[in-house]
Every structure is written in structure tokens, then in C-alpha cells.
Length: 267
Image 1 (tube, one colour):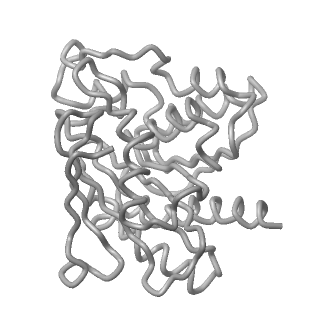
Image 2 (cartoon, helix red, strand yellow):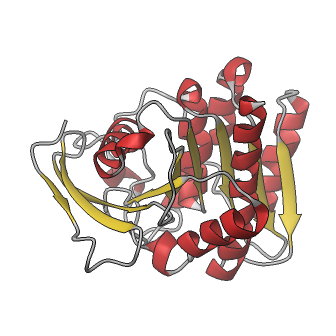
């Protein structure tokens, strides 16, 4: 799939961490992702958790601002969470944030759905054929809900934190104008519409938001609309704002949720 791929040397990266740069056919340029496999883990098939960052961020944000690898390690050690691989791609680094949607000149959705798992399998071949999960924060939460719904057959569960629920919310927060996005999307841009259109095949779904988050009312509205449409889901609110402290703490809720799906499927 990739004409070129560069992997960090294991002696120089943090234990279990691999930095990856590939030449992406979907983006028509190089793109980055960070992968984490807990050291010492032996598994025939290692599930993939794709974690999507928010606006202004990049592939390293979940690791070095959110401590995602430490959260995973602690849950494996103290709560017997099933082992998982964390895959943390950039959004393609367009403007302040691509929205993980299809633009005329680059398909940021296909990068996440089709190419990121292929790159992860190069780092860790035991992910081939394993279950996949998707989560994210803010812009990444929007993408987790939207792409998880549009590609429901590819994910065993969806979880999102502090989500924007519509691309319009993202456009209002970035420097680039609406016309600059130059979209080539054929699917709805509202997370709700994607979830409703795929309600018959959605995997288990949860999302949460902080009670001091400026996106709280949007998440409450999404919850109410899903209830109205009788779409099964879990919605939770916790103290906190639109901050890395909140996401570091509540990533554990996503990982536990994914772990329960693995345990249930193995029973």
C-alpha cells in the first residue's frame, strides 16, 4: 500500500513506542502515526485501538500530552485489561485540522480507515485480522463517531470524548474558512445523521463530556437525539473541561469499554 515507510529505531524510542512515516496514497504525501505495544505482551491477535487527536494536534499528542500508553499499562497491570495496541495517527496536518473528512485533494477519512491499520500491521503483524476499536477527543471524537458509524462493520466498538458533533463546529474554531476545506464528501457531515443512517449495524457505542466543557450542550443534544431515535448507546458526564487532564483520566473509560467487548466476544 505504501511506496515508502520509515520506522523509528527501537533502541532510541520509548519502550513499546514506534514512530512511523509513510507515503500515503490517500493524502498524496507523507503522513505520520505513533504506535504503542505494551512491552512483554504476547498475543496471537492484538486488537487495535485507534486514537484520534483534536484540532491543532498531531500524532504524538495522545502519547506525550495524554499519557495514553501509561493509562493502558496501568489498566493491564491493575485491572487485567486485555492487551491492546494503541495506534495514534495524525489527521493529515491540513490547516488547523482536517476534520478527518474527504477533501478534493486528499482523503483524510480513507487515511484513517484504510491506511492506518495497514501501517499498524507493519509495526505489529499480530494485529492482522484482530478486532478494531476507534476513539478520539474533540475533532477526533467527531471523527470517531462519524467514521465509526460510516464503517461500522470494521469496528467492534466506538467511544468518544468531548466531541464536536458537526464539522461546522470545527470550522468555527479553526483559521481556515469553510470554502478552504473544499470538500468532496458524499456522506453526511453531522455525526448524528451518520449514526442514524447506520443504526441497524452500529457496534457498541459510548461517549462522554466534561460538565465544564464548552461542547457539553452539543453532546447532551446528541445523546437526546440518539435516545429519541432509540439508538442504543451510553452517555456519561464527568467533572472537567476541554483539557488534557480530562482526556488522560477518561481514556480509561474508553479502554475499559473496549475491554468489555473483547471479554464478551471471548466468552
